[in-house]
Length: 315
Image 1 (cartoon, helix red, strand yellow):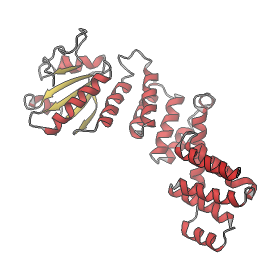
Image 2 (spheres, rainbow, N blue to C red):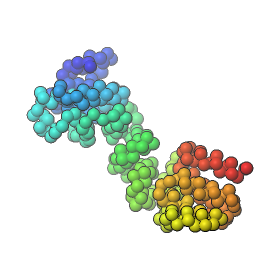
Image 3 (cartoon, helix red, strand yellow):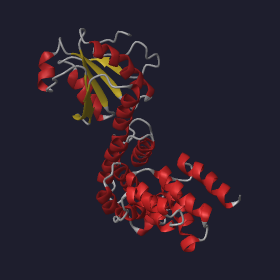
């Protein structure tokens, strides 16, 4: 690991710019962290020589900071040599990483986290600071970062950034849609409904948002349908007694949908289509298309069952 000059420049920074990574102490903390965080976020890594997880975390943390291309800094604090500082900041375990922005601590985590979580934490701080140092529009940079987190399954972290954007830009359509999507992924159905009610006509007509809003609305319709779904066991018994009981098959699809088994829901609908394509004014096919819309056009579920549907319809 490269040795850093306390409070000074990184010897590896050949371009003469200020250090991305520094060693800091009680005496230099004000300059290295508080002052430095006025222009870009700064992570503070509290570590000790005897701490195995600290040694595991530090190189990954340095790499994540350097990969942010100057948008965030890192200050390392030897906890054994700076016990007074650790006491002031209430550091109770090692490693602890605190994020500072505008001179204040804004986030933290403890322990050696995996690289994906580490990257998400770094990206979150950069986004919350409005992409400081990146030269991009702060709201746009934060929105892009939140959308990436949402797509990668980091729903809670994405929601936090969307909320931060809404604090700076109340009623922002993209942030509201993202917040609703995150809430739905977190099974916060009532919150999803409340957020969607806040969308204005401008957001609903935005070409970049219309498909996402439509998908949200379909998902909410499907959830409402699932509320009235019956139990699976008696529906299976009814189908076994009468394989042509299409209403039971349709209700079985809703029951599977309610339990989250979308493959089984699709199979029940295909079973109707294979036997009677026109049953109940094409209800089974229409419902299957709703499942595709809810999942998204490129989702593996949609791709799989679109092929199955085509095979049934054109066989």
